[in-house]
Each structure stands twice: as C-alpha cells, then as structure tokens.
Length: 503
Length: 125
Image 1: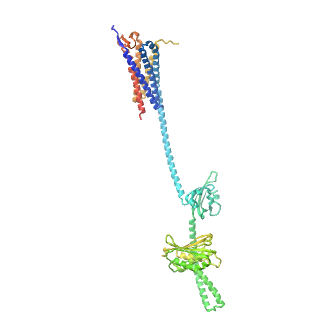
Image 2 (image 1 turned 60 degrees about the vertical axis):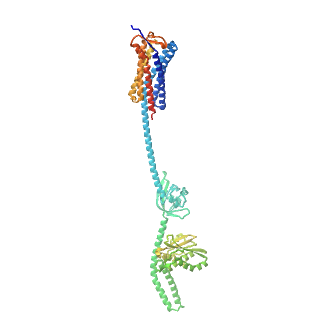
C-alpha cells in the first residue's frame, strides 16, 4: 500500500472566503437592481417577483456565505469547538434558505400568468380608452359641425330678420315686444331697439277697418294676413301698414308668441291717392270741356242778340235795362266757361320765353298795395339763377294771382305770404312756392281742393274754379302743383315747371 | 414524539438541495415555455438558474462524500489542516466539490447581469 498524500486545505479555504464574499456582494447588488426596477414601475408584477427572488437569494447568500465566513473567523481564533457547536444551526438555516428560494421560484408561473392577465387587461382598458377617446373626438367633431351648421342657420335667419325692409317682430302672448328688426324700430320712430322692448306693440297697431283690436282678433285665430293697420308712431304721423301675423299657442291654448311682418304702405297709398286725384281731375276736365263747348256757342248767340237788341233800344228804357241784366249774367257765364276751358286745357295758348321772377313781380305789384292796407306782409325770396321758361304769360300770371289770392284768403287778420322761386338741385325744374301763415287745409277736404266748383267760401264769393284753373294751366305746361299744409299753421302751394321741356 | 438522530440534519439539507434543483429547473422550464429567453436579460437569468442547478448538484454530491469521511482523513487544525488522500478518485472529487463557489458565484453573477440587462431595457425610451 502506497503512503497517503497530504493536500493542504488552505487554498480551498481562500477560494471559499472569496466566493462567500462575492456571493454576498452580488446578491446585494441584485436586490438593489430589482428595487430600482420596481421603483420604476411599482404596478409591474414581474418586477415585484424579481425583487422577491433577489431578496430570497440575498438571504440564501447571507445564510450560507455568512456562516462560511464565521467558520473561518472561529477557526482563525482557534475556536474550533465553538464552530462545531453552531454548525448545525447554520446548516439548518442554509436548508431553510434553499427552501425559501425554491418556494419563491415556484411562484413564477402564477406570477407570470397574473402579469400576462394584467397586461391583457391593461391592453383592453387602453383599447377601450382609445375607443372612448375616438368616440369622444368624433362626438366633439359632430358637436362642432352641428354648432357650425346652427351658427350658419342662425346667421342666415338673423340676416333675413335684420336685413328685411319691412318690420319683423316677435311679441309675447300679451303683445309685449320681445324682438324687432332695425326697419321695425325705425318705422316706429324709436332711436334704438331697446327703447321699444317690453312695450305693447299690438296696442299701436290699429286695424283700419275699426272692427275690434288686433289682440282680440288673435284670441281665436292662428293667423291674420293682409290686414291693413294704422301704425301709431313716436313723434311722427301715423303710417298705414299691411300686417301678417302668426300666433303660436301654449298647451293651454292661449297665445304664447305672436310673430308678424308689417309692410309700410303709406307711400304706396299716397301715390294711389295722387293717381286717383289726377284721374279724377282728368275726367272732370273732359266733362268740363264738353259742357263748356256746348254752352259756349249758345252763350255767344245770347250775347250777340242782346247786343243787337241793345243797339236799337233806348238805353234808358225798361227793356234795355232788362237786356243788360241778361248780358251781364251771360258774360259771367262766359267767363266761367272760359275758366272751364282753361282747366280742361282746351283753350288756346300763346307761349313765349319769359322770366318767371318778372311775371311774379308784375302780379305782386298789383296786389301789394291792397295787402299793405290789409296788414298782410309779402316776403319775396326769388332766386337769381332761374332759367327763362316758355310759358303762356297771361295764363301763368293767372296761376300766380290765383295762388296769391288763395293764400291771402286763408289768412284772417295779420299774416305773411312768402313767395319763393328756386331752381331744383337737379336743375331740371323751376319751383315757385307760395307760403302763407293762414288756417291750413283740413285733411278731409285736401283731396278735393282742385275739383272744379269746390269752394269753402260762402255762395257768391267764389266760383271754386281758381285752383282748378291753375291746376289745368300748370298741367298744360307739363308741370305740377303740390300742396303741403298744417292745420292752424298755414299751407305751401308749390308750382313745379320743367326746364328741359320748356326748351 | 419522533426521535431525530444525527443523520436527519444531513438528509433535510440534501432534500433542500434537491428542492432547490427542482425549483430552478421549473423556472428554466417556464422561462423557455413563455419564450422569455428571447430577451437577453431573461436568458442570462436562465443561465444563472442552470448554474444554481449545477451548484446544488455539486453540493449534494459533496455533502454525500463528506458524510463518508472520518476525522482520520484530515490532519492538523485551522489554516494548517491537511486532507490525507487515502484513495485515488473519491478524495479528488471531494476537493473539487469542496470548491463549490466556482459554480455558485457564476450563478449569482448571471442573475446580477440578467437583472441589469432587464433594467436597462425597461429604462430605455
């Protein structure tokens, strides 16, 4: 038998000590890294598991390598017996640490399954979140689009509302104004819309047919169309309007909203009246001309025979006196007939170029003295740049005389007559106006003043042909006569004569 | 009450080693099954587990061999203690197995490197 070989244990001890130290160091580093991972995402189960595993291995390292190091320290201190005594304890701890690490490791599959489930759930939640976000974005897009459409619609109807030339309004069930467009508040004579809001508009719209107020009519009707109403305006004359109203009812059946459109037809009505007047005067002119022509010849014969008989009779005799009465009245009739012919524009005219200011001054010279005595002041405001017009001198003088005398007769006591001439801004008309400070003309007879034989004077004082004749003469000169009057304040008669037509 | 004579401690420890081996093997199995080893970090951890299995196996055998030895196999005390080789193979195996840190330290080193890699990837933007 060979002799035994003695192998020193020191190198093994050195490897053991170094290895044990490295084990502790590396396992501590593992714990540190695993903690860092978990701190980065505490909800990640896998990182939590790695931290457990690292802790388990650290405990394992501390138990195993720690006991090794203790062993070498005790051996170095010659405390072999002490090591023999604690060795079973460290060995048991080692066994426990193995089991601990093993147990942790066995959990991996469950932890990973949970990790995957959480991951899937998270993905599902994220997908659902994305879908919700997309739906939300889609909804927002739809809302924005709908809002844009609504805004466009609102703007369109607002433009229609505000841009309308007719009054458009919305009232509550009692007629109180809620909204009105610009044309509306301007027509009502307000300075701004807010001035009218809350006022009862329906009380200012009076049906022209005088058959009950508007609100009363709307109690049992859902709409009213083409109703002529008189519109009471602030600080201005009433207007005439054509009204269309729709009523929206509440569940109880009463009016809740009253929406309407009012068209101002005052101008149209004025035009219609003017046309009617012109029509009427034209018809009267034709009639007058016919009558005048028929009467003119017999009158001429009556006058002729009267004068023949008077030539052979004693001027002082009774028969001669009677014939003179007949002649006087026949002459009067003839003058009327001549006036009628002038009104109907059937009499002959001789037109020459004249200065209207000159004609006016001639007429005024005739009446001035008389007016001075009667304390009537005559003011002349004559334009110096008037063109000469081609007119029938006598007839135009008659027009001026008629209008001046009319002005005089409207004044009771003292007063002023202002005579003006001026060239229109467009320089196509010459305007001659006669303004008095008289009593004015009542509205109800205004449309009749140019009618033949219409007069407000007592019987025998006037024939009622002055204005008719003037109208006929002015029309014969292709001109017009306009009247503006204010009761108690006076009137203005304006003769408009065209410049171009006069050559 | 059951009596626990001397060999029971060794058996418990050996069973713990076997349990350790089993758990590490199961972990390797799941890492592969779940295809986590496609990632470098988990692949390193897998190698750590393998090294722990090797270490446990070595430790298990080492403990078994050590159990066969008597005080006569050694001489001296402390740092001057020597191992008296009586036979040719078994004692040499014992020496190799005694230096189990050669497998244990790489195992924990793999684990450390694996964790570091995982952390780097987790923190990458």
